[in-house]
Each structure stands twice: as C-alpha cells, then as structure tokens.
Amino acid sequence: MKYSNATNYALHTMVHLMLQPGGSSVGVQELAEMQHLSPTYLSKVLTKLTKAGLIESTPGAKGGYKISRTKHEISFLDVIHAIEGETSIFDCSIHHHGCLIENVMRQAEENMKKELASKLLIHIAEEAKSKQK
Image (cartoon, rainbow, N blue to C red; front, side):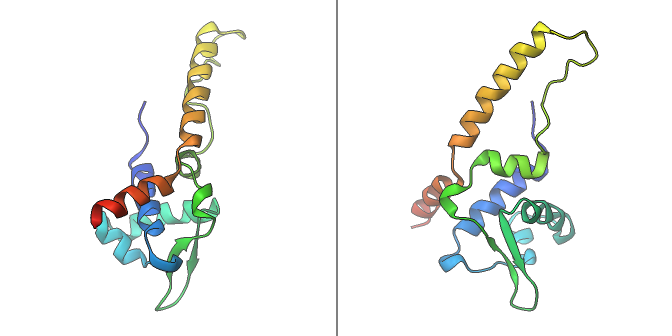
C-alpha cells in the first residue's frame, strides 16, 4: 500500500508549521521552497488541510498558514484522512457478501488506523527541534 505524494508533503508541512514560534504563520512560498515544490501544487495540499480544520490561512502580505488546533491533538491519521479521504483501502464489492478476504483486510486496516491515530505529529516536531540544536 502506498500513500500519495500529497500526504508526504502534508505531513512534512504540518511538522514545519508546528515548529514555528508562537504559532506564527508561514507563507506558501516558504513552505513550497522547503520541500522543493511549486507553490501551486502545495496550495492544493494546504487547501485540503484547511478544509479538514488542521490549519488556517491568513490572507495578506504578512499572511500565511498556521496550525489551527491544539498541537497535541493532531495525529498522523488526521493528516492522512485530510489528504486521502476516509475510504477503505481494500474493496471486495465485486464478490458476494461475506467476503472472507475483506474481513482480514478490514481488520488489518483498523489496526493500522489505530496505530496512526495514536502517533502525534508534535512528537516528530519535538524530535526534529531537538536535533536542530
């Protein structure tokens, strides 16, 4: 299984925003340059994060993006759902009801979701900050 590049960029963007002092805003240009992306592409990712309520944007010359929720509430799964949606990875609908394979795959997916929900981005941000010193 593989997540899209947009999820990768979203996770890195969220960690970068968490590292900002006092919850200050960061412009799309800076965020894009940090990841060697076009601002246009990253704007699409940022729009999804904004719609999910994970970040907020402030318009204007001194505007930008910042975390909109408590940093200790944002999990990996929150960001993944914002970008990828919440649909199941495996679909056995082409077969009859009671697909035994689907039962196994759904249980594995639930276990993965629980793990990702338990991992907070702030822990990665704090680790990155300690390595910068």
